[in-house]
Amino acid sequence: MLAGNGQARARIGYIPRFICYPALQAGEVVDILNDASKPSMTLFALYPVRQYTLPKVKYFIGFLETWLEGHPYRD
Image (tube, rainbow, N blue to C red; front, side, top):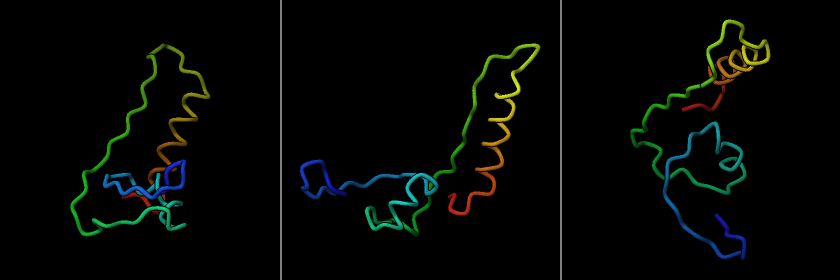
């Protein structure tokens, strides 16, 4: 990856594929540990429990579930 001043920097880290997929496609990052075992990821959506949950909160939670479930490049 390139730093702000144009110097190349090497870093190794785990980034979920659904986050870095566009950078992988563009060649900005390289998957060097492709065969390595990667941890599973759990996502939590925290919101206050109330008698009446706002429809936009319910919609957003449903959107996240659907999007992450069917994401073509999830780990």
